[in-house]
Image 1 (cartoon, rainbow, N blue to C red):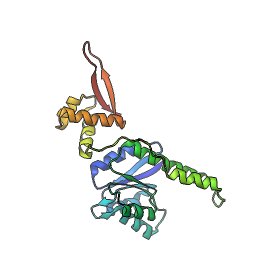
Image 2: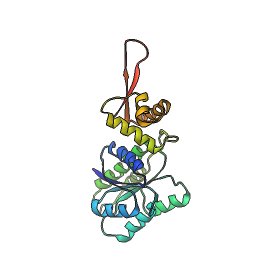
Image 3: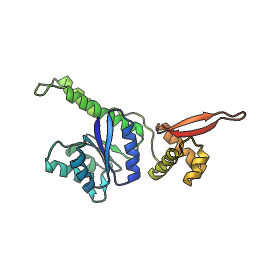
Image 4: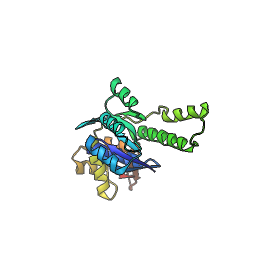
Length: 228
């Protein structure tokens, strides 16, 4: 299992990203951290293989954390997949220079993260399969670099969906212990039925929620939702 530490200052976003990671084969979440200081301590204690690393943190940036880990040289350094709203060239270049294995711009859905994590897992598997000290053919080198750079796939945009509302709706479904209608979700979370329906549809597309149709004696089937 690839031990993953999620670093994000918004605990609701961190919870969503952690849920995404747990759904990908071969990965486990060993912890969450909301600051550079907390992430530094977590790296020392938990020894993760991979950081899902936000750029903006309350006591610095994700880049500051990478610089600190490079300078310490106290043991194997975890790889880092940057997950941030910052898409400026300077941030991207700095992340590359500090050895980040990928850069995923918020907002994004599960499919985008799954693709990046799958590519990272393939890269690790390919590297582990190589014999230490053996020469590597050009074809093998090309395969390694291809694994590190996944092809672009169409993804579901998270635009227009706030992380707090997503977390609220997920919590309502998980706490219910049974399937709920959009109207019931709206009542429990304080949002309108239309808003609940929009968020539920998004969560179904992201495979965090399952849609079930319940047929009555007459009329259209009722849409019911439960967590996967």
